[in-house]
Amino acid sequence: MREIEYREAIREAVIEEMNRDPKVFLIGEDIGKYGGAFRAYKGLLDMFGPERVINTPISESAIIGAGIGAAVTGYRPIAEIMFIDFTTLAMDQIVNQAAKIRYMTGDNLRCPLVIRTQGGAGRGVAAQHSQSLEAWFYHIPGLKVAMPSTPYDVKGLLKTAIRDDNVVMFIEHKMIYLLKGPVPEEEYTIPFGVADIKREGSDVTIFAYSNMIYKALEAAGQLEKEGINVEVFDPRTLVPLDEEALINSVKKTNHLVVVSEACERGSVASDIAVKITAKAFDYLDAPVKIVAGLNTPIPYNSTLEQASIPHAKDIVKAVKEII
Image (cartoon, rainbow, N blue to C red; front, side, top):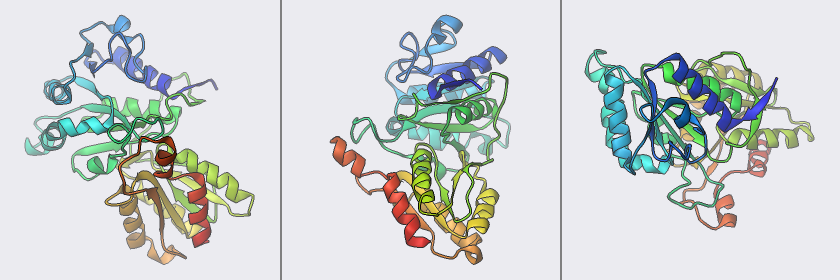
């Protein structure tokens, strides 16, 4: 199978869906001639024109507001917020409007809006451009949250998101746009709420997502040399969450380590730990262990930045503590 970059998989998904449905369009900052901050839309302005690739002023509230208006009138906008940190400037539109329209109108209005954004540390862009804020949206009823880790997953999940009648927060990680992986040339989609086992194992389950999948796989390789067999569990979507698959994995391994780049306080990782403790307590041979980012703003200094987020060595240490 061919291998393509993560960002190219995004581009292919968008092109295919825009060709399939004339109601799909793009809106955001620097997405026109520049092709987006991470070049996922390269060449799309020439392919589809300025009426379907709408370059906006620097106004996140306007981007999301226009997206909501278009969505409830029958279009399927893909609204890009360049950094997840900038969703702060559109939280009323996302949380109080988009997420609640379908519920408050008794399903008379739907809001098929995809909000593409990216987060995470690693490029030295400091505290206002490096946060992992998925827990904010995980918390809000009415929002779906996808966080794909591979080129295969990002293409299949993005196509599903575009076809969904609900608001989807589609959160990518800035460090994996250039990573390559196998992606079929034929049409495919990946359903939401269906997890993927990135590595089979029998001794401990590592729940990880987005860029932390690669840290978990690195840790699993190191632990294998010491005779510890690790299962790496990728939920793909946080909302909906494939709880059944995670519980089944824990039943098999009897141990769980939850890994997240976001700071631990009030995190997705904390919620996952609570869910499994409540629903699979009898299968656990040790307490659930969390490996997460520090409760600190992301430093600009590269050494301190790396110290603030989890790495393979931290995961290895956590696994050894509960095995």
